[in-house]
Image (tube, rainbow, N blue to C red):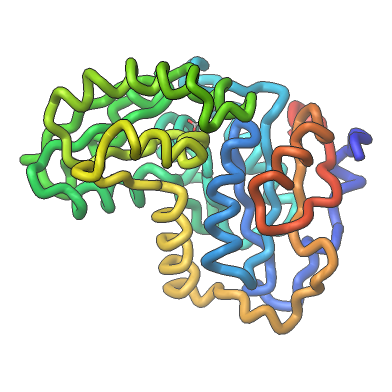
Amino acid sequence: MTATKKESEIKNTENSTPSTLSDAPIGVFDSGVGGLTVVREIMRNLPNEKIVYFGDTARVPYGSKSQENVIRFSKQIIHFLRTQGVKAIVIACNTASALALDAVESDLDIPIIGVIKPGAHMAAKATHNKRVGVIGTESTIRSRTYDRFIQQQDPEIVVFGKACPLFVPLVEEGWLKDSVTEEVARRYLSELLRKDIDTLVLGCTHYPLIRSLVGKIAGDQVTLVNPAYETAQELRRLLEQEQLINTGENNKKDEMHQFYVSDAAEKFGEFANSILPYDVKRARKINIEEY
Ligand code: DGL
């Protein structure tokens, strides 16, 4: 399960020689396990699409890294995903979408989307009082990328950001409904809730997993926006527009999706199986620095 593979060994796997471009997989990447919340939405909403996922478990977290490094990591991962013959790429990581999407998209000849624009568009649609809160990693909040995309939709919307760095380790520890997580969430959210927001963006891959806890604290008057779900909808629109939707006719049901990581493949597999509607039989470890 954990054997390291080199590029030459990985090329020409079951996903790399599809009969038509529509049959090719979607490449999805994240700094680690969090992007599986996006994979889950893609599996639910686009069940015929094959996925090649890469989780950068050796270099997580991205949320406290410099933009220069997040761009470098993203370029390496995109290079790896291209070796898998992907037809489109989804940056499932909010931090990488905020810091690296602009830098990587110009070099690509296949479609690429991040999670921030779809989440921002829904937030602008959902708010009535034009006061939106965004929670995310330190880098995502500092970049103000959500603010930019929300205000592109409506310049009158006021955006309040709040970094919640403790949520990622708490979710990875599995403390989704724990009293400690609830106390931490109350502290983080109290400042935002005093701003009279009516919409709150869950701007980090891990936060949809504590959605019910956040919803309980925020109350019914606050609409929660899940960028993972919005991204799956955006992906569908993009594939339709580019005529890249997989009809599923040529799909092999066995190991339809492929999972790769840069470290701790076994732990990744366990987490994946706890949240995905799919049996992940193995995750393969690769040396991403080779790409
Ligand atoms: N995947 C990251 C994000 O959505 C959270 C974890 C990290 O900091 O790398 O921003």
